[in-house]
Structure formats: C-alpha cells, structure tokens
Image 1 (tube, rainbow, N blue to C red):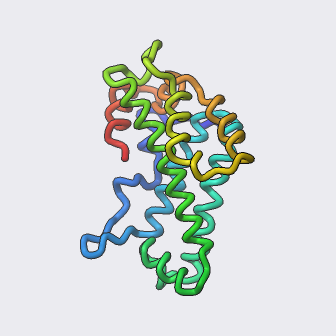
Image 2 (image 1 turned 180 degrees about the vertical axis):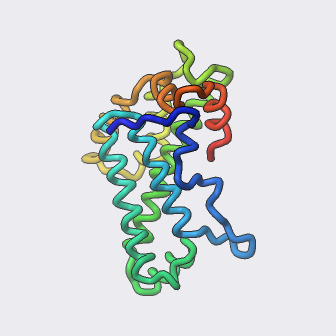
Length: 196
C-alpha cells in the first residue's frame, strides 16, 4: 500500500497520535493505554511509506500485538487505563496474552525508532534526501534489527525479517515520501530529529 502525504504536510502531521503527545502520569509514570495504542497504530503507517510488501509481516506483527493489548483493554477498561495497570491486572489472572503482545509491540517500536535513529546518527549533517548518504537506510534497518528483534526471533522468523531489510527503499526515496508538496525537506529533517 502506498501512502501520499497531503500538500503542506509531513508524515508526522498525518499521525493521529504522536508518542510525544501520549500522557504519562507525573504521580506514578503510568502510560495511557488508549493513547499509546493510538500512537503505535499511527507509527505503523511508516511501513506503508516504505512501500514494499516485504514489510507486510513487520506491520502485521505490530498490528496483531496492538490488537492483543486492545482486546484486554476492551475486556477490562477499568483495570487497564494505563499500560502498567493493564499488565498488573492481567498477570493477576494468570494470563499473559496482552502483556506478551505489549512486550513484542514495544520491541517492534524500538526497532523502528532505532532504525531511524541509526540513520540520522550515521548520516549526521546530511539532508534526508542527500544523493550519496554515508550509510543507506537498509543498513540502518539491519543494524537496528540485529540489536532489537533478532535476539528474540527464531531461525524460522529471521529470514522473513532479513528479506524485509533487503527491500528497504533508498534513504532519499523514503524521506522524500515523508513530505507533501510545498514542504521543505529541512522541515522533515527537523521533525525526524525530534521524533522519539
């Protein structure tokens, strides 16, 4: 599925919820379950921008884990207002489905964030659409995969994710898809730097 960013907008502007807007309680550092799930769902649209069917398993995995957490929330909203409360309440029932889903969702989000962070770090000082980056996006995704998801994947799953990493578009192509008409690349560069 290909996504087109509206004129005057960046990919970040299209996110229903951004992680920086997810409330965290000052009292107990509790993270709002519904806001977190909304931000996670919004983040998965990045895989649409990647434009490769090879990323379908990555996106499907994240959506499946979101569904596990949401199902638990829907079954017991009073005990699930924060992620911490949801896990505590679920574990008291001797069930681990949502907690395990949350664990894998956070791993997937960490992989995504690390891939983009690696890219920005390795290509510091270069525009997102530079024709000759120091490191291509696929290499940043491979490095992130090795450090986040690979240690937890079986030998059957690793080749699927390896194929996805090989299908990562060129850096300049992804980042040019993150802006709509009339938006400077400098704006998306700044938003990338600020993104969690």
